[in-house]
Length: 144
Image 1 (cartoon, rainbow, N blue to C red):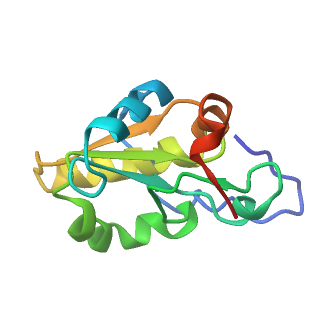
Image 2 (cartoon, rainbow, N blue to C red; image 1 turned 180 degrees about the vertical axis):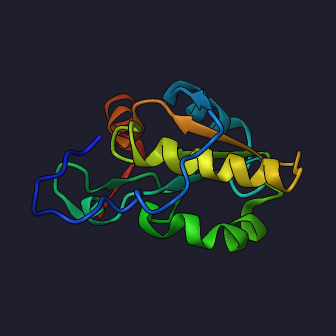
């Protein structure tokens, strides 16, 4: 978790509900196999929840099959996101390392699915985030 200084403002997620769900995780090897066997947008979708750090040289790599929905606006747009991806069986979230924003957004999405009694979609967290993907499959990324 990020720390705050005495003069800092609240962290972006502090005014939002604490997620209840604990989404399943998916390894980069599992996602790679899924991407070789299944059709993106039908069987799965990858959601990149990075915002400003998506342009940084170290992190400026993208999965070409991912959509970018920044974590900072994710919770407020859940009803629309659900309409777009709610019929996709596997919705896989990541951020840089999948230790903060990725798991939080995945949990909010799973909470929304549970609240809607939706069984057509399930939330996953990509283990290690984009960093792990780039280490394992550097040739299968695009540069911003």
